[in-house]
Length: 444
Image 1: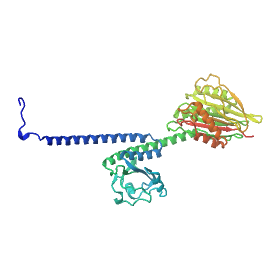
Image 2: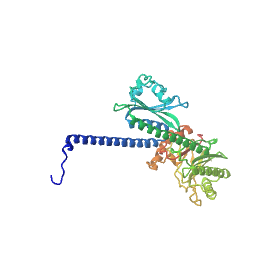
Image 3: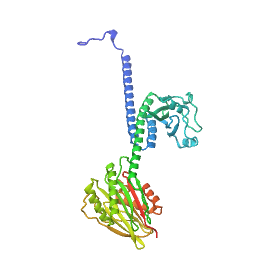
């Protein structure tokens, strides 16, 4: 053919052989691509797993999430996490996953695994362990009666700050295959992230407990208020960083009079907590120094705060309960705070809505209104902060109605049980701290 050299006869390609070679090469490339895609999927799954574990803020939830996430990553039917005791020799906690209700019931009487057999082998030899036939492993001691059949095992130790915290156990791939090196690698990587997540949640808990203890140290123990009875409770926000400025106080004054205050400093940090403490102490001094109506005392407090502090804006309600004939009278003034709730036996619960004054720290020259109403014997006045009722998904009126229902339901309880029930069943979402104080007039 003109312009084109012919193949030498000895070098002419064997078309069937070339076709086979091309098919083999395409197959090899396809297998590599599939392996790369599988590796990418597994890596993405691992990244998603780490993110999901890190979102948990309670240790039991973190431990359970670690187990279920590991099961998902390698397609295991069963999983468990054994937490070691202080000695590092025995299990003090065992978190299983994947058992059916029937399998749980069959194991109900066996108690906590003691860390023997293959489980114990991993405790004493914390290197990753893959076993294709558990019963043939030298450390195997069998299973307790009722235990589901398990033939394969993948075990990986979890370390926290360089110390073995526990061991992650997986058994029975759903495809029936034994665990392979890829499974081992991904679970080892997960165990590293799990150790960090466990440490983070333990630090989270330490911060939360420390913040709660600090806040409680700033709050007073209620004094003897006879002839009245009173109870108060404080609950921190669910986020440990949300150190709040909520407070309560009750002060007995001469003549069977008691002053009650509830307040909330704007902000969620140490500055808010410190401002709360200084505001509470200043208000106490003003109450002991004079006996003016609540609005007058709040006006004095507002001017003093502006003159000598840089405290944030604060909402509060100051009340004064004093004898009136055979019953009592409530005087109160509100500085931008939520209304008290009045509960009288045989009557419908009633919010004491009245003209509110401005919060403290806004304009100390504005007049502060005073309000008054009689209190019959056995009446309960509930003071609280907005952390008890605020919920971003609910209208404030709906939350107030829910609080009314709760208070009505539990008003027959002793006061300490009453405020605890309100704190336990609050209509809020828990994003803010809450303070509750209830005062009850004598029944006769």
